[in-house]
Image 1 (cartoon, one colour):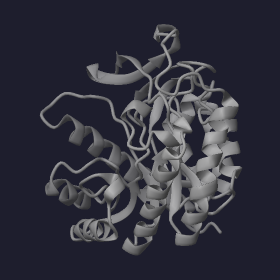
Image 2 (spheres, one colour; image 1 turned 180 degrees about the vertical axis):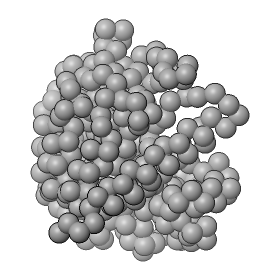
Image 3 (cartoon, one colour; image 1 turned 60 degrees about the vertical axis):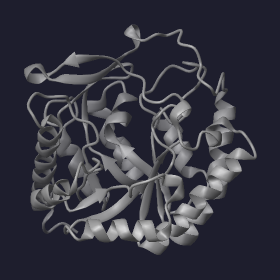
Image 4 (cartoon, helix red, strand yellow; image 1 turned 120 degrees about the vertical axis):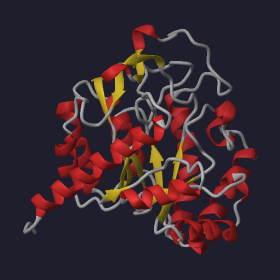
Length: 330
């Protein structure tokens, strides 16, 4: 395993900085409309990334974490045919083009209501930390464009997508990494039961249309948000998915709190022992990126760059420590 990032490069100097920091693997998208990327667009982007000494491990499919109202491919989770069939075919063509371009993986979301959050909480030194407190949420918020959707309907739409896309991913050898629903919310919130917002739901998901190319963009922070006691429970969750080779990318972040009441933190100050977590990834032979995906909002002229650089260094140090401990083990 190795440090990675999915931060969008502001300009070419960001690629240089990542290479200088030893973050030599990234998830990064070519410019333009995702749905219209050609094989040549992807090849050109990969070659540009590689010119800085960085490997392009992954791109984002046109299924993002935004609410369906803002999604490029809304009809897949709206269950609306024939529009969803056209959107699925666009994704299948993208997978074929990724194969031609030599890009081995793609991440995606099967989201409906986005990422609900409540007001930021103050963190270390006055930082602003993303938070979700169910008691402070608008519990009577109206459904979005998907309306009221039963759990069975949600699963049917996911199954419809996987049935058509997983065989293409397997044929063209592109790993599909799905992000869990962030955060867990009680069934029926905004008309939706978030079936990928529980560990049991994620287990069901990865066992549907079984394939070595069907797995998770395992957001450790999001999965921690599903648990009553993340500092005790997360390690066995990592083991379950890791032993089955269902983890294709890791969003390596920490939280304080747990289900329905948490806030995001820097990796060294949350409730999860991140060194212990890194040891578990090593134990299950995880072999891809560990990356920060969210960071607290801090002060200064380059707040995001500094906060992420802190996390990259932290991850690099953990990997070095784990590899040192692992020497000599079978």
